[in-house]
Image (tube, rainbow over all chains, first blue to last red):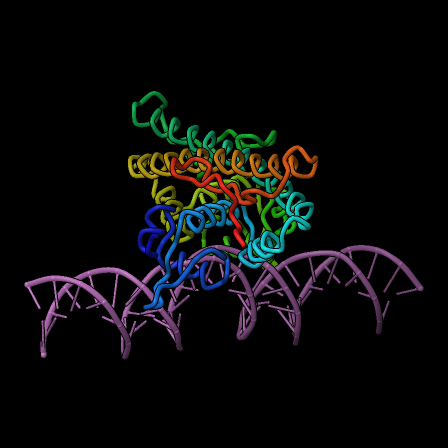
Length: 145
Length: 145
DNA sequence: CTATCACCTTCGTGTTACACGAAGTCAATC
DNA sequence: GATTGACTTCGTGTAACACGAAGGTGATAG
């Protein structure tokens, strides 16, 4: 059995967030002891992981609550839950692509700056190498006097 | 030259966000015509792409503003800009890993539900397969009566 | 000339998901 | 018995827009 602090440490959430989620009813398995202190078992910790995952893929707290309630309703809601998770899996895939592009973008930018610092290129041409994927992106200097 | 609406369409931002960013001074190259209407050239569109990238990697508006100001100051700020972009590149890499894990997590969950729907497994054991990476994760049923 | 679009503007409040601090409780410890 | 430390509830603060209202343009249509 874990306290709020421990649960936060284990899941990488803040204590505030952990309390917030439990108060919203997102962790059905959480218990209270005689002093009204929240106690998290492994199941509750798993719920917290799941909530974190769904939230990071863009699901709203309200919708997470709906999902949790569906889980509590039992087997009859499996089709709905399946559809929901499938939808968010697709979103997660899109986000994965976007994350890749951001890495590529920032790598290009750092390489550009590094080249300047190593005097491999003469001047600060196009300091913001933004939009590298766009056909019509400018290649000339960005800050004209 | 593009209007706010066009800029929004081109960058995937909302019109609100585009106006918000320009009003905060994040798009130095944006101009106004005689009717006080914002006009975006290709350079401004590139800035919007860059702002979007930095924001999605977690940079606060305030810090993006700082970065933009550094760019405007000229070559002398290249070392600072390099350090900043390097830092956010690292963050983007971490986010990429997290995104991969979320996809894996949601794929496992959907597979689980699909198996139930196809009667390949008898009952709704462990409906929330959260925390699959954790050594101590429970494998038994989650919702005990 | 007027009216209707289709934009744009500024202004101001609403929203989400917490963050944070205050003030209090409670068990254990020095 | 006073302090410590972790917990509680309560209540306001915040970031980054979202959204709607109210109104100003300029072009086109009748």
